[in-house]
Image (cartoon, rainbow, N blue to C red; front, side):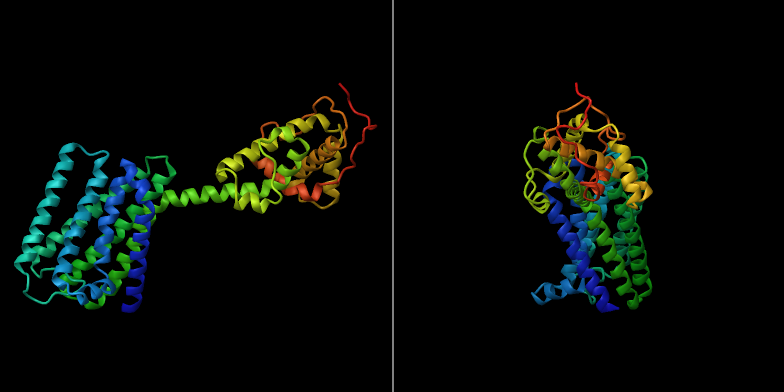
Length: 382
């Protein structure tokens, strides 16, 4: 259990430092995110100095275990104070913020004095407090419990009020991490009071999972951006064959022509993926509007019957019929058939991305399904 706890602890530390480095630049530029970033930074340093795999090399390099523990405890209380400041900063009155700042300063000074008073006395341990005095570890644990309890209540309450999805998840992950921190410090108090060494590996695991949740609360904007990018790339990939064929037939609707393969379009987009997907969606819709001048009166019904005979699922029949009718109109343009009065196709008047993606899904199966009219075919001329 000790070895597993140590490995999970190091993994949690790595996740925290990765999240801090990754989010440093955007977080420090925005005042609303700066407080969260600084809070997680202080927590990360304290958690790092709690890991035996970190404390060991530090003591081997000449640092005293007591010094490491004292620094860890001071930074831990600082992180608890920053948590309190973070949760009251946006809504709390100035007097409450001053009270938190004074209380945090008093706790830090008290711990420093008590820690220095006991310097060189007793036997310090890698994961124990810097002083065996009851006043020392009661101040230490009370500060953490106060900060984490406030974080749970305030973060969860505000997550229920806001409609910004990223903020909701950041607050809830931060609150979940604070719940684990409460469990850790409650268990740590029990350990210090009753001296239960076998409890430490489990507390290390709890603190490590708490670290993962703190890292996740920082990375929510990054995760959302990745999800949006993945969705845009998926749209580009699925829409590309339909978009390529339509803008080839109606080139005036496209800003730039298609590349030779959709793999190139996805791997080396000429625009940010979200903008590229939006552009291809708009251009596909514009091409459909233009091609309505070439749709034959019975095209949709004939394509519908063809798809049904081919065994297309009922929920895809409408998309298949649209794909067949649009393909016939596209080939009419390429064959030089003169345009006629526009014949609107059902479901494409609003240019819904879902409708376009449905047509794109059925495009390979319906290409060439209907006969192509030639120049002598009857049409409703203007």
